[in-house]
Amino acid sequence: MNELSEKHEAIRDVVRAMRTELGSTAFDIADHWEMDRCAIGLCNRSDASRLVYICTFRLPRDKYDVDLDVASSVDDDVPYMTVDSYRKVTFDELVEIVRKHLLLPSE
Image (cartoon, rainbow, N blue to C red; front, side, top):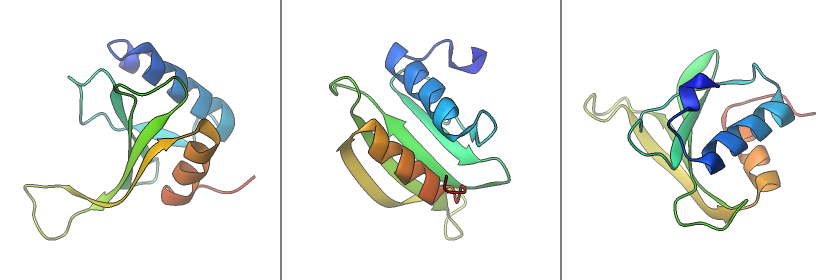
């Protein structure tokens, strides 16, 4: 998890928990927010056109803000556009949101 060494503990913890829950190879890290220690992006390993942005900034432990993005075909300057957002979701809700948006198989 060296790619997360500069991230806040809450981000490292949630990525670790997501890998445990969904499988260590279920998603790739897509960190378009390298300077933001409280945010990370996850994408489907075989289809990077779908992105889940997870943020923990100023949230209670085990609560997450989530934006669901898809590749933009309209404006190349903005590679992704947000299609849905969730605020203060629990870890269990986050798992289901990620599973559905990244088109990962259900248990």
